[in-house]
Image 1: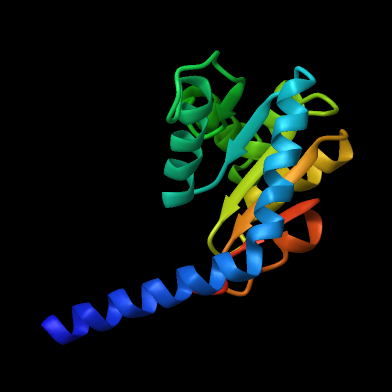
Image 2 (image 1 turned 180 degrees about the vertical axis):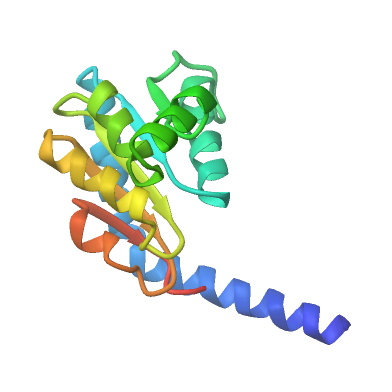
Length: 163
């Protein structure tokens, strides 16, 4: 059992080292995009399913509150938190539209739609990105696995080539 745990840790470290070696420029591009949007008075709309929903909420909280330094709050909304909105859209229109509908209501040109999807294939996440592009939002995606189809829709892609 100990050797299995150590093997998983070694694989995780290799994946992280490989990811950062290949993606530093992409990460800096995303940072620049976010800084530009927030400096221009725009906001972040962050979304995903399951664990990615939790990641969206955590990320939004870090922008709104603080991360490492005391600073002014920054406008970020996790589209995964309002159960009344999520369930009414899911019931009345369909779960595939829970993010697209919120983006349509809250998003404005220059805002950022930030999708998080391990598979890159979640229909509601893909639909959210499509709607964001239609109304002029900048799109960022964090994805894993083989990236699914989501990566072809986003302006900025940060992909972890691992399951």
